[in-house]
Structure formats: structure tokens, C-alpha cells
Image 1: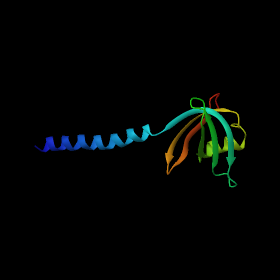
Image 2: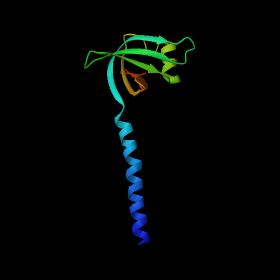
Image 3: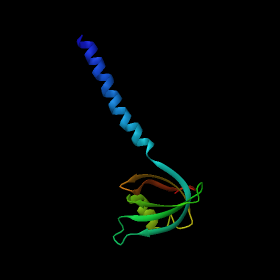
Image 4: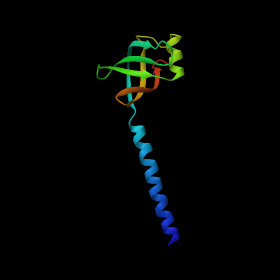
Length: 106
């Protein structure tokens, strides 16, 4: 009886842990498009980037916070006019970048 209870508890635990992880991964939105605007903050700790999505032709505004991408903006490795691949999530109504890379490699 104890083994059955332990097995059932283990199954429920696995289901409750795996389900939220799967949903989080599905919330990332992926786009490929041209950078139309890069606006670095005065302190250099964030940037607002506008990307024109190739599929929908809509301009998406994404907030970039990671140091690696910010340094690429500062050193002009990523510039306006470059084609990029971006993954972002929506938090509090804002598009927060998880990754932003040039499609040609960077």
C-alpha cells in the first residue's frame, strides 16, 4: 500500500512540475525581420529595438536587457537595417527579448 501511494505521489509531482515548464517554453514568440530602430538608454543598461517582421510586415518593439546584445549594439555589430532573429516573451504588456541575433551570424 505504501509503494502504491509513493508511486501515485511521484506521478502527480512529475505532472505538476513538467506542465508549467512546457507552457513557459511555448510562450516565447519568434520573429525574423529587419531592425528599423535601435534606441539605447542613457545608462546603456537597456535598449528598445523595433523589428519589422518578415511574415506579417508589422513593426514589433522589443526591450533588450542582456549585456551581450547591448554590447553588440554599442560596437555596431548589430545595426539598423540588419536582419535579425529574435525570441521574446510578453511580460506586463511589454515584449522582453530572450535572444536577438543577426541571421548572418554575430
